[in-house]
Length: 377
Image (cartoon, rainbow, N blue to C red; front, top):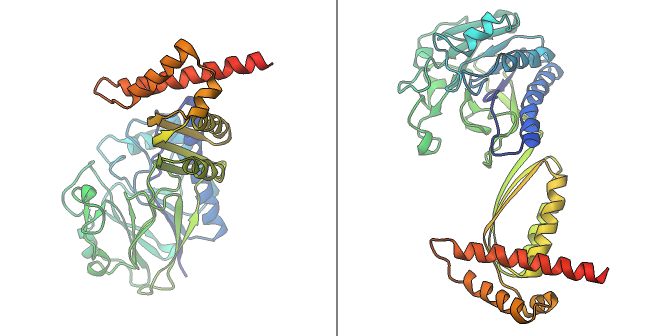
């Protein structure tokens, strides 16, 4: 029973400029760890081969060190690897792949499918039909030659391609690098291993996207897995199982706060996240001064607990209650300032006065609270 591991979209060399240096470095390292995990999985499950359906590298310009580290990370699986160029690492005349060969970085068990055709794996009983991208964008279906490619009848016909299955994926990525949805039928493929969509997606029982093994963006599309495929014999229906490889979970929440219970619920949800989380928050609505301080304290704790926490609070308005104002002991002139800032928040304009007023009110409240605490001590 031939068994192989299907993966794609490693995007090695990707940077995370929106994060601080420490978090960015950790997210980069997680991608190397993902390769090591899938190599270990392939060994554990006695896979016959590993098929990488494009975008091994994030760009042609990645460093030599990145190239060497990628191939070093594959050492945990001694069987054959077949790596296909995708749109980020297309097989140009001069490419990251030709550089890898010049560096002598490619192990003997790694097959680079830089040309359209068949990569035979006779010992494994698998004929890999490859459709590499030789430029970033194409408008013809590079899997069409599969229909005419001949392979031994006793070997599985497994296609590997990188692109967009027409009429299935969202329209905004349904233009370049097209792939016919019925390619497994027309080419009599036992399985078609695809890359480009970064989450696990079944097109039909013989056509799958594996997604990226380590999430790298805020999109709820089942990223962070690899697929192990079992096929009894040529013509048999594949048995596809997915295995989790992700280290970090990415969460993007857009929340509106209206009443105190909304904040309590949000903070409870934050507290329930696993420590290996990347959280991006964008908040709108209203908060009391006491609620704002509660939020700030909770975010400070979360920032130390999770991999990364960012929070956009520009959509929030502070609406101090009478208890808030009384607790500030803002009498006389300070009381007038607090009231003026409350009013200015209600009149948003193109100059951003409302946002400035909110921030000023928060700062003033923080200073007054700190002063009261010092006096009490």
